[in-house]
Length: 192
Image (cartoon, rainbow, N blue to C red; front, side):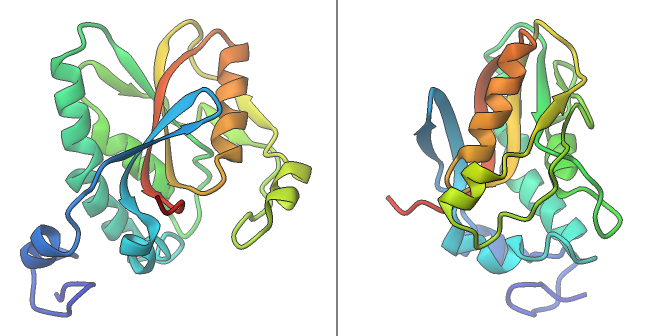
C-alpha cells in the first residue's frame, strides 16, 4: 500500500515519516460559550485528510488520526483522573459504511474511558459545510440524548468551525444532568 499523503510505500495509511514530520499535533484550546474545546490541528494542516470522511479510505485515515491524537491524550488524562469518564460523540450517523466520529470515540476507549455510542443524535441532518453562521443558527441540529444521566463526559467531534454545534450539544447534555468536562476535536478551522 502507499501513504495517502506522500504516496511512498507504507504498511499504514500514513507513513511514519508523514506522521512524524507533517502531521505532528499542535494542541490548542478555544473557548466556545462556556465550553473549552481542545483541538489537535489547525484545519488547513489536515484538510485533505478530513475531506475523506465520507469515502471508503476515510475509515482508515480517521482511525489513524484518532490513534495519533485522541488515544494518547485520553491515556494521559485517565492516569490523572480516578473515576469513570464517558465519551459522547456528536451525531454518529453512519455514512459510507462507518461513522467517522465513532472511530474517534472508539480509539479513546479504556477501562475508565467509556464511549456511549449513538447517545447524541441529530434529528436535523442538514449539511453545514460551507454555510454561513446565520444558516447554522437558523437550522439547529435538534439533538436527542439517550445516554447515561448524571455522569462526566467528554464531547467529541471531528472539526470545530463556528462552535454552534458544540454549544447546542453542550446545552442538550446539561439539560440531562450531564457534566461536560470539555470537548475534543481533531481540527479547528479558526486561525489564531
